[in-house]
Image 1 (tube, helix red, strand yellow):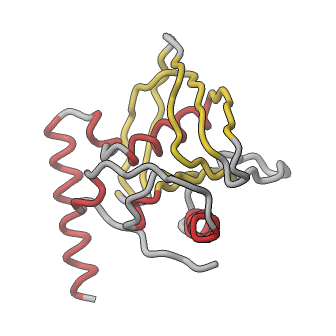
Image 2 (cartoon, one colour; image 1 turned 45 degrees about the horizontal axis):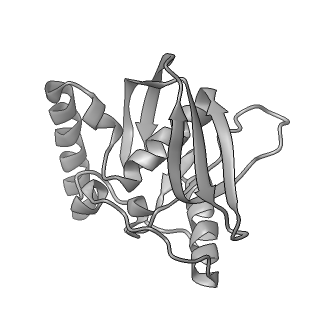
Length: 173
């Protein structure tokens, strides 16, 4: 397992649709392990492959935040939302590719997701609360969409300028 560098917005790869995964291979399993290690290290609750420059439809997540509750690391290959509740929820979102920037985003309160697991089997689960926010946010990454795309243009431009400045500062060392 190894930590992977996380891309910072703006980066064209973050706005590109990821390709479906054809088969569960050892390379895909290693990618999932690396992504989980990178996510936990960041620290975050979700990470999509495009965020580390891999243009494949895989996300990892673990939205367990309560003390004393065992972690629940998940790897979802080719995830798709097959049902969304009509109820909406506004939640503050952040992103490992847009560090230290947060905004309220409205999304369906519950979603049902189907995906291919690392075991080669199809899985399906209904998510709510933080899990629902996380899975929708990460699936958006696979479609080249960021949480700031839900914001008004002025706020989105302000955050993008902050990220450009951050990238310049990091490049200078």
